[in-house]
Length: 380
Image (cartoon, rainbow, N blue to C red; front, side):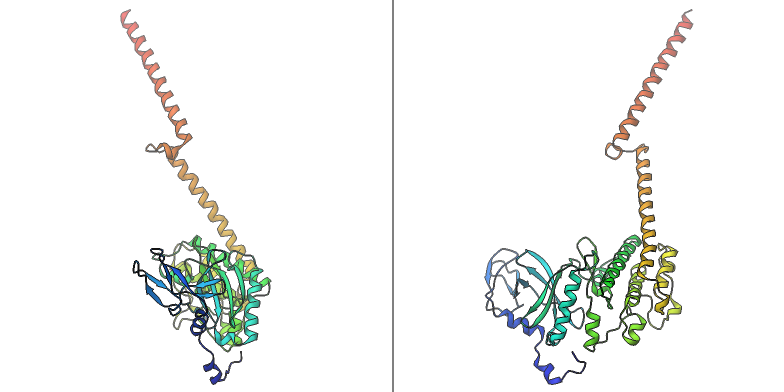
C-alpha cells in the first residue's frame, strides 16, 4: 500500500471491530456458560458483548465465528499491521492464535498476497523456536494466519510478572534456540527485522517461539517506520533488513534477559556499553564479551549465526557436564550421610547396612573370645 493513502478512502474502510461485528451478526450463536453449563441463546446480543448468566450470574461473552474459529474476545494489537486473537478451533478442539491483517491493509490485494505468502514460507520451516503455522487464507476480505497458541503470551508479558532474574543457563538456551531458528529462516530466504519481546511467545512449558516474520517489510512498504531499542542502527538509518540486523536485535534481547535492562538507554552511546558480567555476577566473562560483540554498531564487526552458535554450544555442553558432576557429588554425599533415609540411599544403603552388622558381629565374637581366654587364665 502506498505511503500516502487518500484520506477519504481511509475513512471509508471500517475498523476491524466493525468488520467482525458485521461477520458476527451472520450466525446464530448458542453458548454454554463455563461456570454452570447453562445454554444461552446469544444471537441477538452484540458481538463481544458480555452478559450475566441467568442461572449463576457468571460473565459470558458473546463470541464471533470466523470460519471454523471462534473468537471469544477482542484481540490485541502487537504491531501496526495486525491484531491477534485467542481463538478456539472447533474442528480440532484446541485453542489457536489467529492473526488478522487490519482492514486498512487487507484492502490492498498485494499486501494480502504477501501476508499469506509469508505464512506459507514459515509453514515450511520446521524449527521449535519458530511459531508453528496451522492455516492461512482470506475471509470477508480479511487476510489471516492461524498459528500455535502460547499460554504465557508474549515474552514481554512473561517478563513483567517475573520477580527474580531468569537463570543464566535458561537464557543461554533460549538465545541458542532463537539464533538457530533465525538462521534456518534466513537460509529459507526470510529475515525478521522486528525481533523483540512482543514478537516472542512463551508456551506452557516455558519454551519460546518467534513470530512476526515478514511484518517489518510489510510495514516498510506501507510507510510505517517503527524503531525501538531492539532496532539495529543500520535499519534505523536506512531501513536495511538483513541477517546482521537480526543478530543485533538478538544481542539486545540477550543483554535484557541477562541483566534485566536494555543496553542503550537515554543518552548512552555504544562506546559506553556496560558489560553484562559487571551487572550480573552469574554471567561468564566469555558470554559477556560475546554479547558486547553482537551489539557492535558496525554490522561487519558482529559475529554471524554460526559463530554465535559455536560459542553457545560450548557453554551449554560445559553446563551440562557441571550439572551431572554436581548430581554425582550430591548422590555420593547422600550415600555416606549418617542421617540418610532408605528412600534417599537405595541399594547402596542396604550394602552399607550389611557391612555395619558384619562389623558388629565380628567385634562381639572377638570380645567373647577375649573374655573366655582371660577367664581361663585366672582359673589356672
